[in-house]
Amino acid sequence: MSLLRVTYLALAIWGAVHPALWVLDWAKVKGWNPWVLIEGWQANAASTGLTIDLLIAAITLTVWAIAETRVRRNWVALWAIPVTFLVGLSCGLPLYLFLRTRPVG
Image 1 (cartoon, one colour):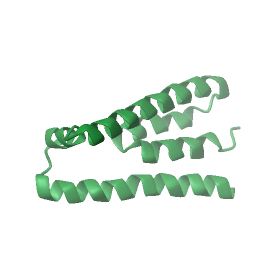
Image 2: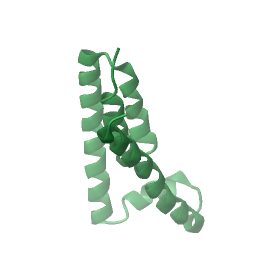
Image 3: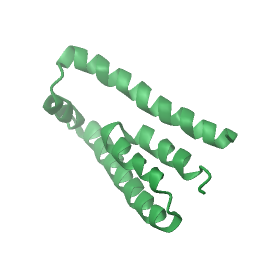
Image 4: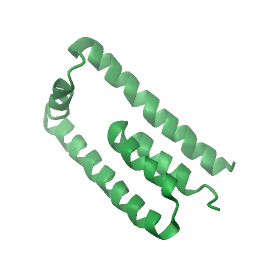
């Protein structure tokens, strides 16, 4: 595996673990209610702006992944889409790049 692919994989793992630790710390204080988490995403103008920024980037990644997968026929790369929306863009984008750069037979 190339150094570039290892880097993408490491970033995907970091992007899954590190943000999750912050969310877990937050959930210990606020509870495990997803509606309270969504309220936190809109707590002030800065967090709302960041939430919208990440949503636009996630939608952009989704459009790119679908368009490119149709051409390259690298269907496994589509796993990045649910990962992006269920885990986060910081995991989904490097995961997509990792899967995209794999040798396709």
